[in-house]
Length: 408
Image 1 (tube, rainbow, N blue to C red):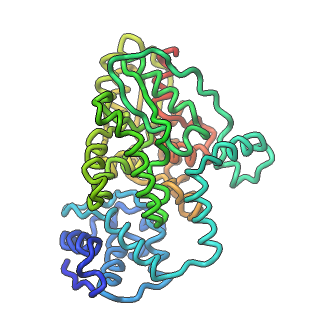
Image 2 (cartoon, rainbow, N blue to C red; image 1 turned 45 degrees about the vertical axis):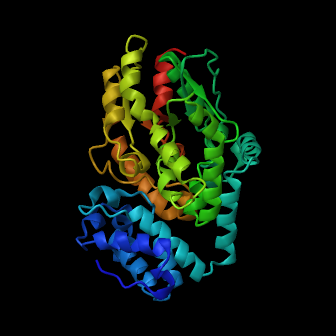
Image 3 (spheres, rainbow, N blue to C red; image 1 turned 180 degrees about the horizontal axis):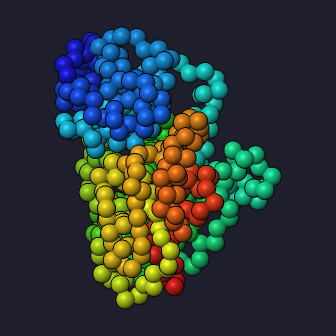
């Protein structure tokens, strides 16, 4: 697809990147068939191909409207289209560029601004933990919509204290320690059982995705630089061998630090190194399965695995969780219908677009329910919380199931 950039974009880094991505587009429409919002809304402009044309028009100088902004807002950034695209179009990078430009040109209403500000400033804030504790204390009297976002208080159990020669950093995350602390503790216990010590850098916080995808891209980059600074002493010394992510949404973002900060003279090289060292917890599963095989007593009952979009499309990791848990004696199945589609969580999406998010959630739960699972498992706290809000079946992180099977 050829484009003629408007003068204001011709000599910018964003303009050149967008132009290079657009050149790969062949207008085939394969992506439309696997786009969740197109499946729900049936509007060409609510699919990747339509959004690409909207972004192209803006880059060529056409003034965007609130309607343009709305179609870009409705994108889940699930990147299913990238898995489908035969031309390798980096749609996720293009939509980030398009959203930032459109937001500069189309003012939002006061309500929308306030909600977005609350999300991007509140979720990564140190005040989130106390607010979550208060919400959990009052959970029984909360309105149903808010109650769905506040999981019951969880006992995380003990953090392992043994030291091991092998050490890995873990990003605790911005909301996970308050909402579901057992995910991090279970991760540390599982790694400990395999002879790996889990370290957390106290100054590392939000991965940057919340602000970045709410179009505060500079704020997101600032959080990325802060994490790099927090991790760098351990990285530079060679003390750690990997940076582990047990939330696939954080993982896909940190793996892209190198791309996002590629033009930052002070951080480009460090960001590339951080991305190279970053791995999703599931990428350690082959090694963990070998180390833990004699220690695991697999619980009975079928586990239905929902692979998050950030895992299967963003990181292009498929099949590992169910295969390697199966090797450890667990019975794990993936839905036979639409396993590739997003559950509707998508970071802050379920708050900003609840109707679409709930339709996708119920559609996903319907397919998972056909398996009649004992427990639904996933790999991202957003997916876990969102799915749990629509079902009585327990929804957990797969590492919690593995941890429980170790009897720790």
